[in-house]
Length: 336
Image 1 (cartoon, rainbow, N blue to C red):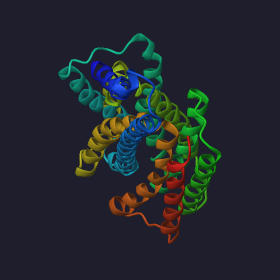
Image 2: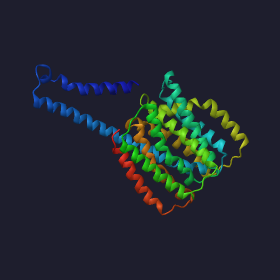
Image 3: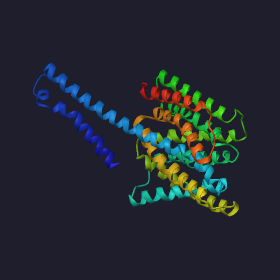
Image 4: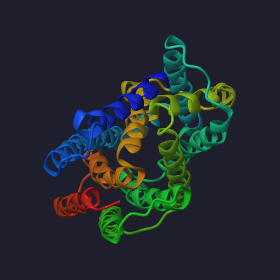
């Protein structure tokens, strides 16, 4: 928080400096000089905002890449672990990584006013989404499960508008709806168009994850993103440790290269590192715009499914990818 305060103070000094220039204090400012000074300040602010937006977009995109590996890694993990063991153990491992970082850096516990928001993050992205999608992947392919991610950007943008009062433009909403429709149409076609019992798990995961993303993005504006997910993971330890012990005692475990690699990725990559850069990116460019970058996630997931799981894609994949990239570009440039 001290670093953040210093940054804010630095920005205030930089902006107020032109006001203390001799021409601005000693008398009426001349038109050309004053206009040039103000224009220079505005240009500097615009360049700073552009750099921040570019970095935020890059961080959010890295989060999307990390998340795109979650379903294939979960499928690998299920080769050697039961669903309850996989979810609880991944949360415990991620909490140990996050807790170690918090201890080493001597980070103070979050203020009590943030506990409710952290509880929503924990329920959505630490427990709810991993558990529901893992249960779904017992009977669903990764291609079919990608329907959830196809709708997640739009759902997150809607919850953000309700929770935080954001008001993206009509162009944004039109592009978001078009992108969601393209992804859903492709993934449903890819899975044969049939609905399964796993869909109840998938739609439940969609709702809780969107809530966790929205609340985490809000909190990432007042504390570093890695601390948001870090404290959410640590707060879940009283639940996840007993759950892991119970699940490991009742579900068979078969350690293989795939199952261990899958577990390690969903714990370190999806559950911690991916969310660190994702929340920081959302704080920088806004929840609605960051969420639309996830339109590319189902397509990336399907690519990983081909490479890692041997699944097959239809010829519609390149066309859908092009449509989604156009929609992402529009949402990133849309006002609001």
